[in-house]
Length: 609
Image (cartoon, rainbow, N blue to C red; front, side, top):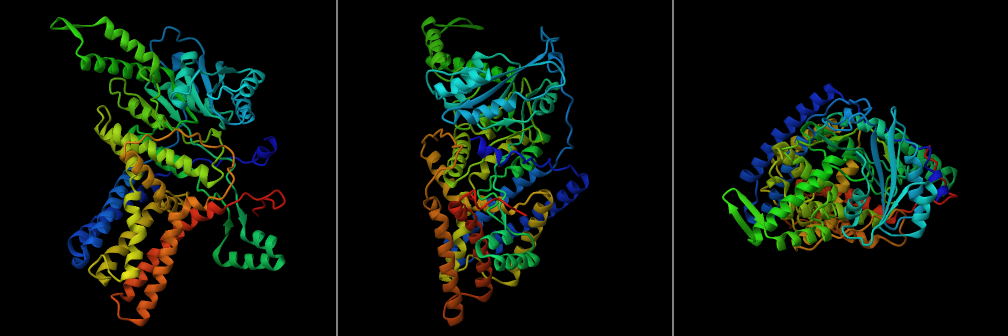
């Protein structure tokens, strides 16, 4: 274990994207232009471009384009405005982070919780050792806890050797959410720092995040997750020279002179979360809608426990009214029957009735919605821009699949059963931000149309538009160009292509999650593996392989048909759909290559120069 981590110890995260008012103004200008041109394009598509002889094809495609345009509007709203980076000074005593507390003069206390189930105990040990190195400019009471849902003697031994508190429970009810709830009942710190088994806090974590709590309305602070073991890849000349000798190296250098640096095997699973944390989440701060993502977040205990009590109170009230076992004493007073009250107490002791984290696969975002919707208290959240911890990334496609399916299914389950769009207490901007997240998980429904539409045309010659004419390209090209320019400026400093390709190639997993939730089935609580899984993973990408194969075969057929003649194919139509299909294939190629990726062996090295 030590040898594995030693390979990455010298890596440090990039700093946050700097704020630029000038760039923000340019982004807003370009985004407005893209939205206007996009609306013009969508209007024209519905009113003047549909092929009346193939409405079975034309209407689904234009509906898919409309859904994608709605997603674009939500994304622009999300990215519209950033805030300058401002880190508040670390608070000294409880007086600095609360009002009216009877112990206001005492030092702050923080519970650091490492939630674990079946991960290697030595992995957790490293996180504990790093957490012990956290510094703070004032006296502070920091207590470390291992929350072991695996009830393992080896994990208990590590906790005892490291001198930290070991907490276990008799069952795994509620999985991670239940684990956290049980630990909160055994601890009493003012703040709770949540860590996964592989989380390794940096020394500055508390010093940089507790300052936000000077605002007594701040309930939690989320920090960016950074995977320090992401493959750095190998430069093309190095790879070719290692495989084919000096001649291969020279060929690689010639290619790089023409096309620029080429790196192979770099972040094969597109795990870099910088786009999500440094752009999407960070720009939600302006409307108080940045949500908790679990590990690397720090919470005000008062806020979380108050949410639990409110949830319990609402459940008691509902149970009381529903059972119609109320004895009315007067027009203004009700007394609950003793037998009902005893039933409620029993329920609270045996279920999730009194819990700060709902027993849900996405307990973090659900708790965020609950706290944000509390108008009476007005709880706030903050996305801290600086990386304050490091953790392990998925190292194989199976692990990536488990993780992404859990994210998608959990979010869709909330959309169906606890839809924030209809939740009282959330502001309209907050509803739009949460709606943006959940809407993105519906994208496979229209992405599958985008993937197979060029195949249909290339095979049949049947067009979804009245004609691939100058008018068609006059509407389409300005929209695509303006959109690309706007997004390039809006996400300046972060490569967007990998994220877009991953978003498109996600369709089989997304469809599976949508189907599972639509059928009313529960999303499971799988623990994301922390070590590489062995075996072949091509079976996981059969749908993506099918997209590539069908597109290639359809392209060959269309070119031949155009050459021979006698089919409805047009030159402009074939060229447009060939380019469209090529883009789809490139997007699928990333995840297919990820299924085949193997980490370099020790003798191959990791030279990237």
